Image (cartoon, rainbow over all chains, first blue to last red; front, side):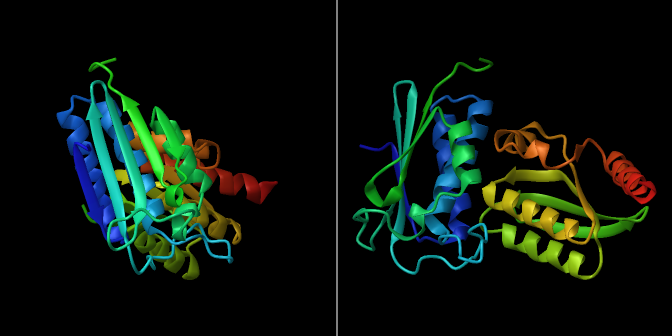
Length: 143
Length: 122
C-alpha cells in the first residue's frame, strides 16, 4: 500500500508536480535536505523518461516535446521504516501497467541513467514498461 | 518556477543569464534561445546559472548541444555556477570535464577571452 500515489498525463509540464509531491512526502518522512535534493533529481529523471519520447534517429537527446498521446504515468511512494521506495511506470488509460518496453520508457539516455544511479541509493529498471524503482535509506540529519 | 533566459553583451562575450528550473518541460526554451544566439553570430557564450534552482538531464543535453554548436563556429561556452546542488549534477554526469565552470561572470569572461587570445597567437 503506497503512502502516496500520483497519476498524471504523460506531459512534460507535470514532471515538476511529481517532483514536488515526492520531495514533500520525503520531507515529511524525515529525510535530510541533502537527500531531498537527491530525491528531487532522481524522481525528475524517472518521470521525464516516462513522458519524453524516445530519442529520434537524428541523434537528439530525446528533447522533442511531443508526448505519448495516451495513457498515464503512475508514481507510487512508499515510506516504510527508514526507507523510501518510489516506483514510476507507464500505465494505460485505465491505470493498468503497460506490458514490456513501451513508448519512451524503453529509452535509456546515459545522462539520465547516470543521474538516477548517482542520486538514489538504488535504482533499478523494472520489466513492466521499462519503469524505474528508486530507493533511499533515511540518514539522520547532518549525516 | 518558470525559466527565464536573458542575454547581454559584455566585454565581447554574450552573457546568457538563466534562472528558474531547467527541466524536461522548460529546456526547449533554453535550447531555442541558445540556437537563436548562435544563429545570430554570437559564438562566445557565458551561461550564468547562478539563478538556476534545478537542472535535469534534458537541461544538460541542451548545454552540451549549445557547446557543440558554438565549437562548430570556433566559439566557446563557459558556465558560471557556485550552487552545490547544481554543480553536483555536472559532477555525477562527468560534465565538469566538458564545461569550464567559473565562480563569477567576470572570471568566465576573463577565461574565455584568454583562451581566445591564446588560440589567436598559436
